[in-house]
Image (cartoon, rainbow, N blue to C red; front, side, top):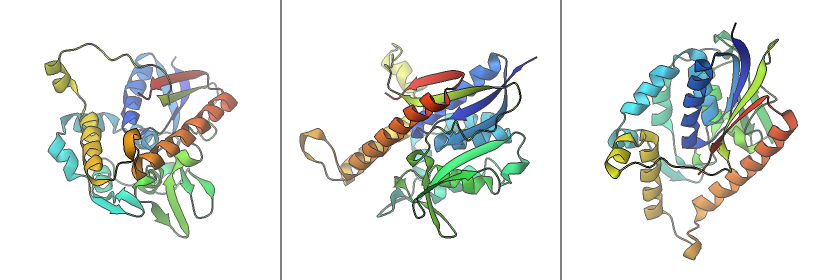
Length: 261
């Protein structure tokens, strides 16, 4: 009999793709995911899993090249975010027909932050697309999602690793996957040719995105801080601090730490 688990996936932007490997290894080890929750990229990967489309998404991501990735990015450089997000989110819809969260094969939770009413928003029902769109709206990167009188951004502002929101089931154990851990990263030793072949599509996207930002945004002296990077680093520090508090408070049975470096 498989050990049932409730799985929580942290936010982490591009690093969130590592959650796919975590899920695959957990299932390989004989665990059965009975419920899942996530924030930001963790909410997106969790949605793919709850829909049963995670493997399809993984195959698509591995086939992308740099030009195809940049066709998905609609830069706005507006006061609300650098990327409008319509192209990315329209492509996201192609991996799943929008359906109600309560109709998924396992319980699913995504979190976002309402910056108008200053509160956490927990999605346990209603449109799955709306929940993911709100949860992945990284401040300064993607434009916020708007619903009624709420302006919704990445849930990492209030609950970056929602251990207290996942639905627990009888006899389960709580497992968390955290992709922002402050631990060393030991890169594999491979030659440059193999590195180019094996470099993930998302890594390519990040490198190209940073290169474009460096050409557009002003620099700030030797520290190489600019408006975007300052806000991004500050938000990341806030999310990391909140994550440590949540991990200590809710004490998952198994903690999977993945280096943020």
